[in-house]
Image 1: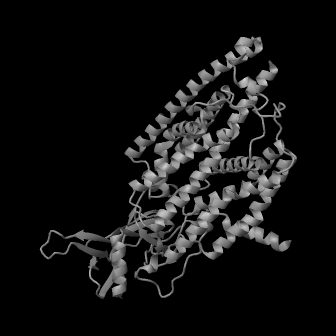
Image 2 (image 1 turned 90 degrees about the vertical axis):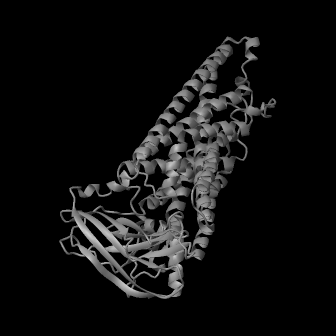
Image 3 (image 1 turned 30 degrees about the vertical axis):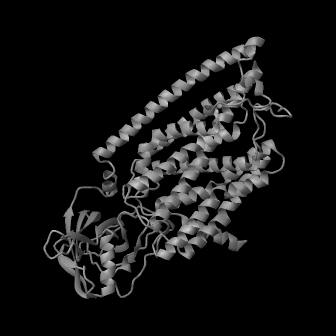
Length: 585
């Protein structure tokens, strides 16, 4: 028991992305830590390699920095470097090293330049980037050489400081210091660097402001506002229209039912199926698992927004978001277990164990399979996205020691304290025959309509989000993102209620699965937009393509489960309300 307890505590400590925002202070001439991180092609964000894969100047002993769980998930591999950047001390042209590049080294550099490789470093925990080289097109010259591959050998650092603290730093590759690596010949190269320090009045707490400002350019602000206004208009029109229609129809239906006129009763369709509308949904264990997984994912996203608003993590902090996503998912496992077991136990005395098992693998199973296959692919390519064996063991250990007990505990509570319906009429022994439905009342048409409207409201913000995940844009507006998330939920609820009513009005009582499919259909449009985004981008290669579509499929699948559960819950509450009103009449 003591061993298990120690393992449990150790696993949690390894996962917690504790980033105490302590301001490092330095005196003039003090050495400030600089770590090289990774290299990779500009247009393939998932294809990054360790910095010393190329023949840069390297220390006699490369010491890798101990990384947090989130940094490993983010593909960071920090190591020491030979650059000696001392606080508030200018340098003009200091040598890093002088080395002979072999033909193999030249070929690697040339391939990196051809693919627009950049390198990333961290100086006092501030990220900086620069290009490795450039291509000159000389097809206009007489000698016939079309392209010239040039390697930058000098990097200049511009640093800002306030008092005894580093505020900002940028790196620039000097175009005047170049080495031609077009031909496969041995070359003697001297790598150099320089740094200039300038005072600034910017306080230390605003040091990350430049990353936020990069996302607040005028054109980006305009698109944010356009998306904001567009979403508000859609929500107002949709809610207003459906509210008027529903109120008018429901009042007329309830009036006819209360009067009891037999001729008028024939016009009211949904009251005739009161003995079938609460019939147990088909494939109850799977249906309960969908509801449980959706509730867990919705709770996880809400927790992440709360943490972002509280300033617990920043979207541009190294590795923090990955850690909090993983921890939030683990700690909300009890919600999935409780919701699935509770719903299943409400309709059947047995089978809740199966629903609990399905809830445990319904989302996590495809996610783990996709991650496992992508990790094998990443390891074969030798990229930093491949998770080390130790990290995989930590993930498995935390899942077994934390997630599984919480999940089972939630299931036991859900079975014991099963949800009680305020309106549970006795169902008919034989289900009522459903009349033929017009094409626009069938599931595919309703899925198209119910998915298109929510997607159109979030399309612009979805583009910004994809540009953050699969590009280099920093999304620093959690408030706008949270508003769009609320809009998505609100439109999904409104459409679910409206379409459920119109379905019941034609005496179609098979609404359970259809409400899930309608709500989750927005995720199908999201994945279609992923395809469009990929085709419009410059991403290429097997590795990047696999990572892009693999993880986007998992994200869209998560939204399918979450929005499906939201749609189902909204329809269920609406149906209980209107049939309770009939019972009261």
